[in-house]
Length: 136
Picture 1 (cartoon, rainbow, N blue to C red):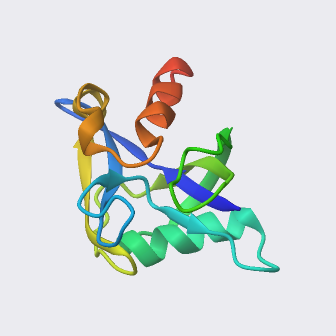
Picture 2 (picture 1 turned 60 degrees about the horizontal axis):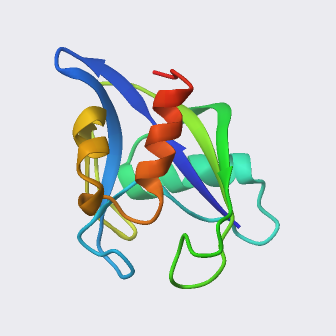
């Protein structure tokens, strides 16, 4: 089981999403939502907040579940089910990439949706779900 954090903020250019640049395969060099595997005995709600800190340096406040993704082909390593949470972070928080993230930064949601080749796994589809649900 895995978790992913969708963190958004408003800017003058539009809605931005916090993304990491993956430093390891699969998808190294691609943009991804902060997230990772739930450790044995760990609550997924705590795991998503832990992963957010490890990969971006940001602390967050847990929001609602955005979706659950479980397509067996979503990750080339194995069948991984992910719970995707909307997580609130301080919009001006300093970002510090860590763990398996080479970088962490804010990206315009519209540009991510228009550039599926830049986004790892099924995270572009998750962003489309975000737009469809009108969560900002």
